[in-house]
Image (cartoon, rainbow, N blue to C red; front, side, top):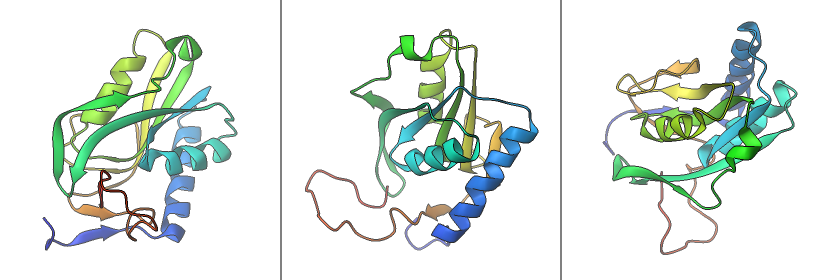
Amino acid sequence: MSGAPREELTWELFGAASRELAEQVAADGYRPDIVLSIARGGLFVAGALGYALDVKNLHVANVEFYTGVDERLPVPIMLPPVPNVVDLSGAHVLVADDVADTGATLKLVRDFCAGHVADVRCAVVYEKPHSSVRCEYVWRRTDRWINFPWSTLPPVVRRADQVLDA
């Protein structure tokens, strides 16, 4: 996978992509009460959508799945602090992430919300063709590995237990 062509997302292009995602949500008539970010990559998407859709109620779900380029755990796991379902109760929730690759992370978070919220929908910058989750709002579809502007450069501080390029 490392030698294969990659999709390049710049900060400028991300700005346009997140605005277009917000326009899709608005054009669909969906008015989320909460934007639920899947950390870490979804934090950028959720923040941009929160501003564009005038939603101040942002929540975070910390999910670990990728351990490297095209390397992952057997299943994604939610890390503490897990969102409180009472805070989500009866809400219209927009789950935001940078990419729907396998779809496993989005499925975990969407299923976590199910039964507690009025409605849950997903918005991603990229969706891969093999994703098990078909997101309601997608900026671009690709089968390539994506270089995101927030994870392309190496960390300023390198921690031994952290994953690079994921």
